[in-house]
Image (tube, rainbow, N blue to C red; front, side):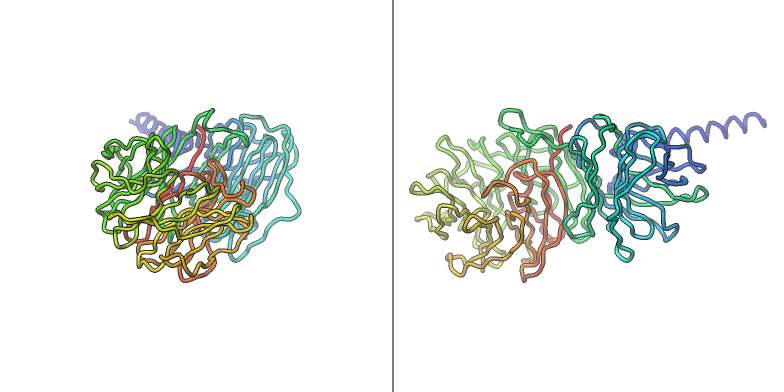
Length: 504
């Protein structure tokens, strides 16, 4: 009997160990590095897509490391981003963050970005196997308000650590070239207690590892990379992936009942439950070459689309439940962006009479002539036009005098144009929440081509009040074209949907 008890106990402990070292969530590997005195562990909550990681270890420093590590083997460049939060208030030198290593050896070449127990946020690295750890002199201290978002990017042999307070743009913390880091490295999230007799705990969420394309990548000749369909609560900023595919899809709308999303893929439209599940193709009749410009009328009865009818893109509309489309425009190019609250007028951007740039037009589905609402010069551009729910304004993005793209609004007759953002970014596609209180939009870096909104860039999803005020960052992602081209607010004005990208 005694031997049976011992055997059972051994099998039980063995089972725990196996469970601790098997894949968890996104990560294929879950184990301790450096044989710490106390064994770490990790769990993953599928509902919230949050990791809880526990670990001990004397330190991540000197010529060797001890820590808990959740990781994958990644070849080539990557952009790894997540939110980190410690439990409790213990040892000031405990560490949580991102790490890339050359191997599982405790003295391997490594680099990481770490949040410490006292608020220090720093980049660290070991240039050669067994060498002493190093870090830059310009560490960032934030003892009262931690930098809780950390990003680690690899570009060839260069590793960049960035960090941000919640709601703020990422800032560079350190940059280091590591010539001895192999092209295929171990990348993941890590925790170390800095006290070998203590296990520390942290939560990690919004975990995204994006593998970007080359700067000169051409999707039209080399193919589109993978997409994730995500939803987010805009007030706690927690993201959830509900659908992934190793090809192109774009631009979700939230359906009126709040239980499904609508998005375009391969020239057609599909719906999916907001928690994921089976896709359902929407009947759009002859219109089978749709792009990412589709939007739902305020009363939830009509669907507007942009379809390439052979002459180029034109605007059509049909019942939301599906059916044969009717044409609103017959002159290409015309790209839809919004409905008026009267559920009759539609606003779109178009080129007319040989113009080199797009202007904003509106037209009624009951017929009549289109009305031109903007008049732009050669270097100016407008896009993303959308009515506010109260019908008082049309919001849009525009550039002037060759400058960056910014958010604007005007009255429905085109009068009283007012600039809303004044920053260094290129701000596109303002989307107004159903309660009229918020503007969600996408921001590109300043260096993109004038008047463009390309795919596969590091972008931010941002939020600002319609009443005025500074924007705050909702999400950092790899995306751009197709991420948030259309209004994707939930009916309760609490959530938003979008598409991010990554190679597999």
